[in-house]
Image 1 (cartoon, rainbow, N blue to C red):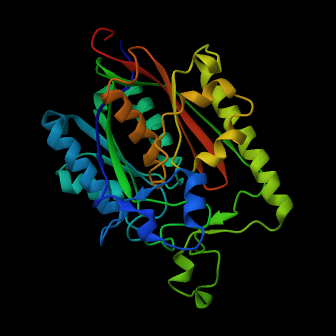
Image 2: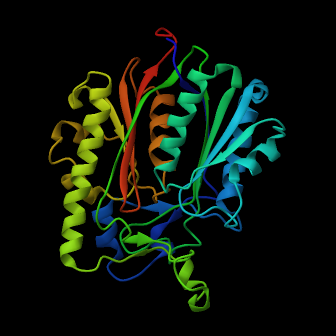
Length: 334
């Protein structure tokens, strides 16, 4: 099969698994974790999200040494902030790998960024195959932006993934389409207050570098929950329709590890897909890293059939839901 595909994949989860009971042994934790399904996290000690992306990219090239010469562009997509505010992680990756002639692009779109990066990579390799393959990297370091790895809703983790997108025929996840739906209200409830909106004289580090969730009232929270359900449903249906599918034709669906307690509301219009979720909710949420990590692990373990249709979906703060429709292509299909 021809098209754009993810021909190589690597991940980096720093350190050993840290039980959440050790990270945040607060009152009522056992009940809360039972509701979320989360059990452990990974924490980067002294490493930024840029460092994690460099590590993941290095692992990809180490496992596929012939791929390096064909990389024409690097796209980075940090889920939260980049390592040093103004740095462009794609350049750090390019420099670390010695890609002297690769173009570099950074996408600051929250957790959705890596999905959009794969969509842009798909377009580039199909429209300009002479420009080489595209290396997409995504990273999330929440440990410096949360208290005890939580912002009050669920627990976070640190991690990174790297993926090589090519137009060369072969196996792997073929990227079929991308879809997104954005909110028109309450879009800024979740944020890192640091930025050019507040007056610099009023900043109080490190408090202004913490993730906050602040809805104006209970009505806004209810409105957001209902809106999230609609946006999620719309993205799934748009993706399926893009290839003439029904939602029931989707064989596997990967979500972020943001808690099992959200699933009932999300799938109330798509109950057939509830049992096709492949997310491992034991993990702390790693921004846009989670869905792609879980899907690739399922594929590597042989749990996703040849020709299966799969989706990777995530939300960006409270502003947006987005997803990719992928098709698994194994050797006898290629």
